[in-house]
Picture (cartoon, rainbow, N blue to C red):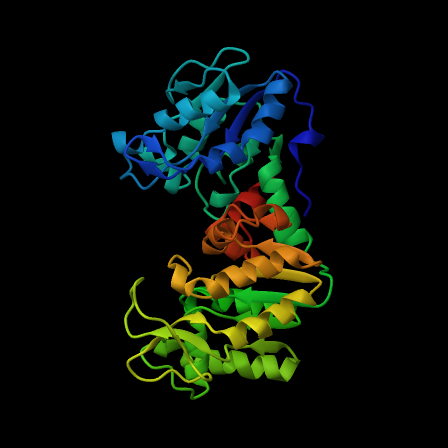
Length: 385
């Protein structure tokens, strides 16, 4: 179902309760990356321009259902205040309602047990801060927590902020009728993490490209020697079934033709390139090789739609980053629609310095993976219902 956006509402002078994802990386009380705070600014600024009184709510880290200074949102409120050039008041849950035009922030939602329990009574305490509910926290939309699910259902008027609406547009709506060929690039360390996604995409895509450590499970399932590479032995049968299904349905499944290997999992390890798919005992695959890069880039170049989730190797180490960076650069040059599914893939795009050339880079790791897998996200269901 379509989701109402804030620009479709009468916002004039309204009181708005807004769920954001300010789960920012911290070093003590110092914010090391304010990207998630900045991502909420288009929605927040639109509300403020309409004269709204805004109360923000977010989680931060994993406190144990009680106040912990290390997880306080006070540093986040201070940083937000700098970005919007106006005070951001820390608001107690039991406090009087904020004054007209004020921007407030509730403390870390996970200080209360009711948040993760999706508790109705806790949701009612949150709901008193607004006449309109806005969710702009895509990164938390896959969690049935009170601030995402229960509280939204208490509001007759609820809407998506610009960030969440953009995620839904690309990760769901645009992929409903993708331009062909449709290529899905799957990477990362575990087949088990991507089984649901692969199964969901298989009837929809034309080509599935597999890289990263998960590729060694597929190769091992074919009987290929992969040395000391990571293999999920409990998923070998499932990998075989997936390969058979791809063959039966005409989906092209591309696996590495060669590898960059080392004898130790170490950033300083000597890297060598295999002659073929085989990895000798004593060595482990840590990146895709040059022949594989050529094959994968050819698929990307000709694609009408490309979705990428997961790196091709241990890209954090420069010596094993070539495959992942090559994929990022190829996507930047591709003429088709390019979507990056968050997490490590987004970090790789930033490392390759091609962010501005990708059509959409998701802000949600788990939420993006679940939405791409066809799972109904509680945060979206609550806005639609």
